Length: 486
Image (cartoon, rainbow, N blue to C red):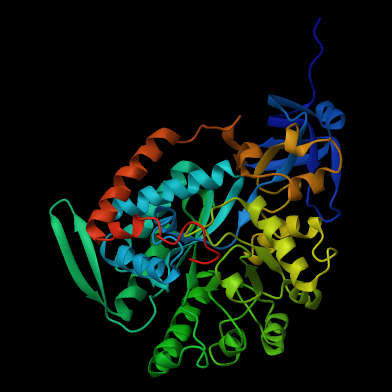
């Protein structure tokens, strides 16, 4: 006579791991487990207790592994993964190349292939949610036609991860020339601000909420500060008009808002003059902030996105400890994936700690637990998603990663939070789950054909170089060797 199994049926039990929950108590559960049903976490606890409560269709053995919420990259750029290395160390050449390629030398296949590449890299690095501005460089966005955003989003959907795609107008002046490439030929058109707005609105209509909410659209505008951009003063009314127009769209459609490139005084100006700050706004870089800038963030509940590996963090410093002490939510991001950095959030956590410790000459600045918060629960708060992701808690989406702790650079087996933040790298992520679906296991991607994507990248990159006429920017600089400066 058989005994009926009265345990609750679930889809997956991740068992026997060191569960770093990032929940309000910041529990770290040795020999812990995470129970998953559908796309949600139903329980987190010790393995024995959850095995007694649940009957799993599949059990994933997480022995000698850390179990964490999926990492969150709160600022990066669509398009950039195809522009790695172009121009070498010449930042001006790279920015000019980005403008040329994004407006005149990229087709639908470029934006789809780059999106596949970026999503693949993020997936293998344990980044389950990422923000991507549709373009960049010097605020050059691909918003002449909604098809480019559509192709970008489609690639993310197929890969299986989550993406917040930020769209908005390119920097003044306008109209700006954009070239569309099709099998039948090429056509260049002048695109004005009204057209850009209509395209952004169409992107929201077509893509926001796609794939059961895995795709979200945010709005963005170029940063403007009169003291930094005197050459743009003649376009100040354009900035004011756009702030009103895009702000209204964000409120009407319930969209978050972000900007790329804030610096001293621009946050206070964006709040006081443009009305762009608020609890659903997250502002990137934010270097050399004034007391008024920080006060504006505190007053409005605006979050700050710190990119410690970015060139802007060489030019100036985002006052992260000061912001945190003032009560501002701060997240760490990659600003990837070009010209000289990728989507390895472990690298960016380490960089963040050492960057600010060196500034203050104090090794106690930014504890390793805090920087882990800044790529998990604090990042989720910054993106207004903390009810859904950012920690391992019952009721939240089942975005889970495993990090292999049984590797030479991760030994001995103690202090798991310290090891994950100070010694791990993207290659230590051995399993990535998004919404209860395993997308990578034992470093093998299951959702898409990795080899096919990589082969396609080379083909599309070659066409990009041919169209742009920028092959000379692939040469290593002659000053590469034997000198202290380029």
